[in-house]
Length: 428
Ligand SMILES: *Cc1c(COP(=O)(O)O)cnc(C)c1O
Image 1 (cartoon, rainbow, N blue to C red):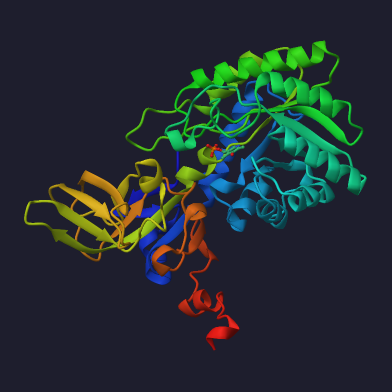
Image 2: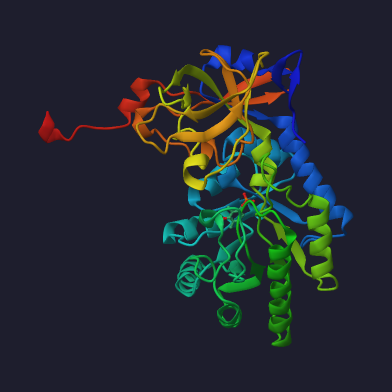
């Protein structure tokens, strides 16, 4: 459920009409709903608690929100107040999580290529755990921990060799992917780490993909993780926690309904029953996607003689790349729907690439130039993947709370964009 709905013929975010935000901030602009972020977090946590799942400290499992889904500081601070942790993949994301008030003890550091300075920063900050993704990385962490005189708490990331996820570019758990190590390698690395005085292996982690629409691959992966916990323990190695990653899908309107948080939690409870490990999760999309929209304006509607109709927007692939990159589907809704028959059209942006097409042959409600439209479910992997391609300014971000709203990332000016670059002395 989300808090974007029609009231009196107009699309609102909570108690704020989207047209008011567009009128004041301009388009394109990302708009996020605090109530939806909070609700999604709460629904997940309740599902985990009701299924009897526990974290390492005996309380509810750690929900380490995947910062990359939507790293805006206001979004992170909203979730921090709910008790969220953070799953981070760079020093920049760790710094964001800290700046938003997420305690270091709730921050985990994942990612297939961590640099030495980043590992040092993570250890100095005292984050909860580093998820180790390869043998060279394990050695690097050991070296940094030794040089700092600070033992590193680790989870070994296993690649369960279970492919899942809505698109080849977002599946991460196949043996051919760069993420994590195989089961046998994990066992060896875990034992090696346990023997190193500067490494403290506390558990295992996996993350098999994103936008996963059925429980079966997740369950298969988690069962294999359980077997590995049992094998490690049989060798006398302690395993205190299992971080089961993210990946739960969201309904993008034309896709199969993803598993509910309650069914997901019940499955995890079944698979981990009696294992006695603390659990952690790294959800991103399921918290943020339906909590945000991208607002755009129709610049014009252009009909080709052969009959193709193009709705040209002021938003482009640099603002929302998911359709171009993942063939993703976003519902496109008029902010003030008009009466009249629907039309079939391609919806495109102004960027000089054929890939700058949000959808083709979509049946759309009637639209005219100047109309505002909302790309629904754009709160995750929207703004966070945006760029200035074609020297277009980054879309600003707005956070709504009831009737209140605030610009949480302003649109830069052209002067600011140009001032970030420098002329080498020989051109003067
Ligand atoms: C991207 C990512 C997540 C979050 O994935 P979602 O599909 O957004 O839930 C969690 N863990 C890791 C390691 C990731 O890379």
